[in-house]
Length: 317
Length: 273
Image (cartoon, rainbow over the protein chains, first blue to last red):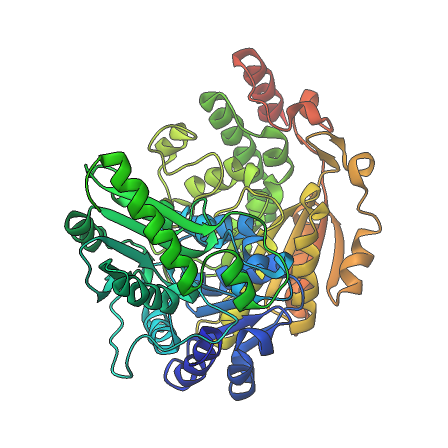
């Protein structure tokens, strides 16, 4: 088991601090939870504790970006999306180069339950025309994505992180390419498109499926926006079936983004798999099992998808 | 330097231009533009350091108009100063115009921050002031104009608390305290008093003035700037719709454009003043 992406983000941010004097970090009483504590200790002049006032934190970050700094605001994703009005006006509409970092995403956070779970953040963030959305699937990808964002000059960006530790998917020499989906596994029967907390599970599910005679590809969609339409189209034409898997609400998340990207493509069946309800308490793994987001669940959803699609088309799976 | 007499005259011109613009657009917010005319005149023709033609100059003073609906008076000031062409004022609220119904930072470079969703501007201004402090070679001051109604938004007080905590000295906020908001008088919608005490409690230096007195406003700006290491707020007591008898102190003209006949009556009063 590797590190949580929030911890990897914190380590990268701490490293970036010494090479990027314009990087500042804003906090709303969660530094030790979101991973910014190391930066706070090392660079107290560039760390701003705003207290439990996320809307103001977002606004101050926007002003700092307009004043030439590179602010990272980090909090639980749900508390940031709760201030979506400030994000859309003060950051988005101003094209202010703020890095909005939402941690504790998805039901994977476990016992704290729905009130602390970011389940709507992808939908909201990607709805802003200039907001970039990145979701790393393991620690090394989170570090590389953080490094990328320290130098990104294109406007606002959203980084989606997990509370829970994730299995390593990418090797140590991994190169993060902004906007380029990574084909982790090639398949002929369907393509599983995933990122974040469920990525390693998707890979394990593909492994499981292969034992059942089903050839599933896995595409790591770490950059959800701008979306890699080319990679998606390629996978869709090869397999004819796309299964999107995400630890996020099914409305407006990765599934929605993929459907939008493939909306003009003919002959592709798409199934969106994610969280269908408000979250709840339980351990992360119990919740992944209950909501079919663990390897077994994803594999089950995939074979069901293949069966139903085969029936519908009247052909063989 | 622009004299007090000239500033008074400029405020009158800004009122006239604001009403002409809003009339031409067929919609807009006259009440809050008229109340803020002296404040904006003082800022753009005496207080703010900026260079026409160089909206991106890193050392320019920053001004955030948090009460974004009053942007006509700001566009009028930008035209009077030569930052935009006077002709452009006719494009207010028209398709493809840089003069959006509420301030747009991306379309119009002289606008420091998009506003119009009330309650957010002071946070942005605090962020700008903190950025200046970290990068003080630019040595700018940040100003923020707030409406009284928007002080009902909790975020304003979050920002006030943060500015006090960080001792943001090079920040001056002005409250255009015209006592009227869309639904009626501020004191009946949601009273703000004691207003100065609220800011003071958050560590601000608060000065109360007649917001239509150019001399009083200039003194207040000087007083706020003299106070080092402390944010300053000028509570400017103003009259909504100031200068047009039938628009004064009423919420009826918060967000309504005058028709041709009303415009003529208003302009006659302003020109005779």
